[in-house]
View 1 (cartoon, rainbow, N blue to C red):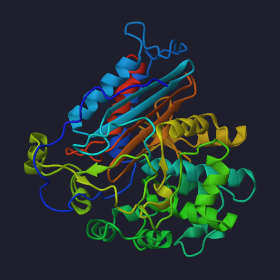
View 2 (view 1 turned 30 degrees about the horizontal axis):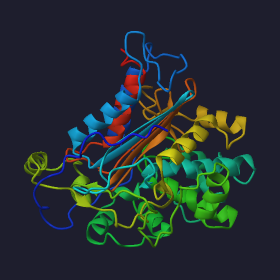
View 3 (view 1 turned 30 degrees about the vertical axis):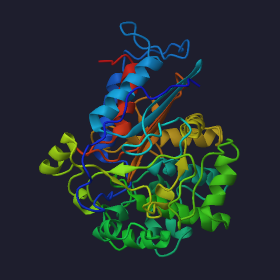
View 4 (view 1 turned 45 degrees about the vertical axis):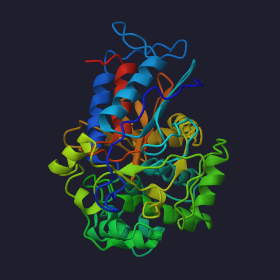
Length: 433
């Protein structure tokens, strides 16, 4: 590891917070816009100019016309991204066959004195979906569940469950309504941030709304799918999902700093960073960016984001309740990309599951069995109130990238860590064209 010290102070607004407990995130999601923008950039940056040479001296080789990607370049990307989006803190780890590069920026609290360090625990949001997906695939290879079998064989009460397959839950093609898009949930997140949600409550919110399309006839990213998969896993295994994750994933990979906390707590293991966000959940149902007048205030430093660290994350459950660190997430995404916890046959089936969100065009990002691909990188992104993260692994170059930021979303509605990840991937690929 490179002992990198934050090289720039976080840009901290000068005035007091406007309003009260205003900032509440509307949903946990791999947003179509973020996902698409990130993937298109990666596909461009890792096209014909992407080097397939092995990295050297803990640097990832870019194209012959560009300088090698090294720790200084990584630090510069974090400094510039955090400054642009006014993020209090960020951290990144790039693992290559020849070594690791780490960079950190800023502080763990807005205007605080505690610098970001690589060992901080953060909420990882939708990266949790890759845990849930992997468990389901393990159960499938053990003969405990049929990926092409109907949901009704494993869980009662799902409308049209006899025509929705387990695979369609995994690849977001079930059509089930995303409970995170309901006004009921978003109003509750704004008004009752400490509320403890049961997964069955979340499922009921989604199932109370009409489906987006018949099973298999479209794509819509829906947390309802992943919560239902978590309930099915618990039913099949006869134990809590936290225990399942621990036994099947965390312990085999020695991920001692990773956890799936109880739903009745908002605590994060020490050391951790606080998380910040702008806007309200209800307002962000229409636009993730602040209104123009508030955006101007934020950019001028007179409107600060709110601290949402203590908001209860139980509304995300198996779609996003996980906690981890840079090191553990890098271990995880490497295992995810190499398939070390699955049989070769099941890993190949998972790779084959990656399909365009828009089958008609065949373009853009791909999503599959609880994971995504961003050009050559396999992984996921995660975003929830106050925390945004990206993780990706390139099987060809064996490069892993993990980035997190303690601001989500930014004042202008952007995903800070995803933006930095895009820049890192483009730099590693030489910025290809």
